[in-house]
Every structure is written in structure tokens, then in C-alpha cells.
Length: 360
Image (cartoon, rainbow, N blue to C red; front, side):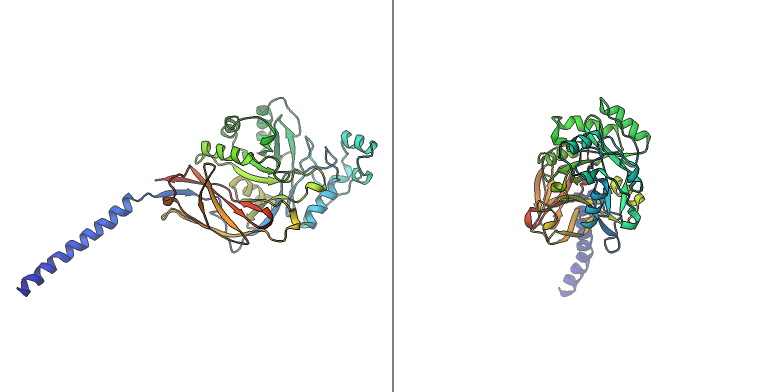
């Protein structure tokens, strides 16, 4: 009897192993698998630096109240490594030739009216290399929709956007839609341009503090329509015209080195975070993102950060998860992307670029 039982058990063991193996295979096959596009995939979190940037600011070359060198000096004092002076239809570049540039007629009128300090119409050169900064060539073109134009010298206002965007493309420039909340266009209007122009890489979602709070909703609508085929990167900029709006909005680029080439690559690939600090640099505590880890097999994304009060994961304009880790299989309401907002002391908000997500 014992011998028969032993033979039966010996016979069943392989069957159990086969059934267990089939269970594992079936579970792996039928569990949803994900394809996650990670804009930070090439970032070496231990070795790459994080550099503060402002890509939208004005001087007395257009309608700002401060001289170019004063603006550069103020951002340098606040620890910025990347700065674009984006005067309206004026390329205030290179910094080493400020002294040969002239103030706008509008600035001269404001000076005559006692609304501008005379020293801000006298220009002095600055050397970005000596300051340890990267000066980005650019301006804010009236297209007529205001658009940030970078890495080119196009400076002509136009009656319609297409001619402007084609001209900037011909000069190998990059573009960012500025403060869309100022206008009355719907999401489809913007989606059309993003589909037509690959060099239109981003959208300003924070401007002059948080002057246009609906811009994040617009961005989400654009992402729902375009992701995963096309990503649109987010930026937070001062749009500085005077000292009162200086230093509340910035982006943080994660780059292997601080060069013009790497800044451009970072803009193209979305290697950045955006920050809004209502108290500007008076707030001593800003959250820090130390790493972003994506696990394609498990369908998870993890943010390692310090200094935060909370972390929200947003997809399709809705909060779908809270905390530093998201498991996509646990979120039935996912859209075609997910992004992160990190909340810190003093109302600080820091955000990531979108991760496109697809079930395989």
C-alpha cells in the first residue's frame, strides 16, 4: 500500500510542476504589460547636474523696466544657470554686445514720463561664460499668438502664426507657446499647431506667478489628444517685466554638463521639471527630486524626492494616485499619459514632464 502511494506521489509531482509552470506563464501572459515613455531615461541621477532656468523675461529693449545687464545680474544672484532674454520681436543677444543695443521707443517714452529710471537705458556688456551661465538666443515673437523663439534670430511680427512658425523652423529654431490663457483659443486650435510643427516643443503652464491657472487644464487636454505619438513639454516662466515678478517661476534642467548644446537637447527631450514658488526665493524650502525610476515589466513609476508635503499623479486632468509610487495596473482611469505634481511648503508646486503610457 505504501509503495503504491509513493508511486502515485512520484507520478503527481511532475504534473504539479507542469501545472504550476503553466499558471506562471498564463499569469505573465494575461497580466497587462505596459510601455512607458520616460523623458528622464537617459538621466544619470548620481552624476548629472540640476540647473535653474528662465526662458521668458523682458528688458527695456521692449516693454520691460530693467536694463539687460541688470536682469542678467539679478538672475545670476539667484543661482540661475540658464537664461533667455525674450524681448518682444527683439533679439537681445549676444550678451557681450549689450552696449551696442538701443532701448525701445516705448522705454524712451516711459523715461520722459518719469516712469523709468534713466540708468536702465544705459547698457553694459555681460560675459555669460565668466558668470557660469548659458545665454540662450531668443525673443518673444508676436505671431500674433505670443510664442517663445529660441536658438535663432527671427524677430518679425506677423499676421498669422503659420508664416512665423515656418520661418523659425527654417532657422532651426525651437518654440514654446507662451501664456495660452491670455487668449480664447480652444485645445483643438493648439493641437493643430503641435501636429504641424515638430519644433513647437512646449507650452508655458505657469506665467507671472500663476496668472493663468487654466493653462494646466489646457495642457492636459492637449496631452490627451497627442500622447503617446507626440509629447508637449511644460515650462514655468517669470515673464518678467519688473523686479516684482522676478524669481517666482523657473524650470530645472537635468543635464550631464551645462552647455548650449545640452540645454537645447534638454528642451527637445523634456529633461526638465517646472517650479512655481508663490514667495519666490524667499521660500527657503523647495522640494528636490533625486530620481525617477520606471519599471516597464511591473508597469510602475517611482519618484524619489525630499522636502515635499505630498505627491499627486495626474492623468487626463484627474488625480489618479498619491504618493511616490504609481502602479499603472492599480489605476483604471488612466489616460494616455501620467504626470507628477509635488507640493511643498509655502504653496510651492513642482512638476514633471508627462510619461506616455500604453498597454501592450
